[in-house]
Amino acid sequence: MRHLEAPELSFLCDMELTVEGAHLPGKTPIGNRRIIRVTGGKLRGEKLTAEVIPGGDDWITVREDGTIIQDVRILLQTEDNALILMTYRGVRTGSKEVLGRLDAGEDVDPSEYYFRTAPIFETADPKYDWLNRRIFISNGIRLPNGVNYSIYTVE
Image (tube, rainbow, N blue to C red; front, side, top):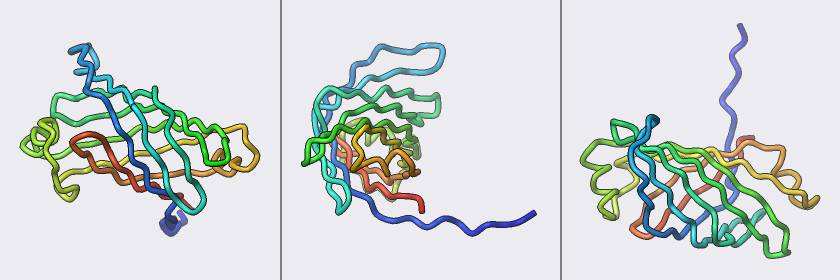
């Protein structure tokens, strides 16, 4: 069996999202559900600069241990007016105490919890077609009124 080296990462952009308070539909057979409306945001990087068009959603499932599974769909508009669909799934988890602090809206040091996502981009714009053909990952931080991510291309 051949062992391959780990892929390298290159910085794509930082993303900041603003969100509304959670809509809490309650516990379903899958887990506790939260739906959070994305009200705006921005992406800033050398290869990708865009604004987040308000109206996307984060459909969250909260597992029994407090781990959050994200399912996010947002629409981006670049500074040259290209439209890009961005979806991502992610995991945010930590100790019960840390997750409680995050849920209470506290500013918690990101070293105290695990928060990663796997973004996928989709666009019809030829200038940004390369986004359709790459894998991306991000580190995240939960803030009192939103989230920030640093997104990397897997080379």
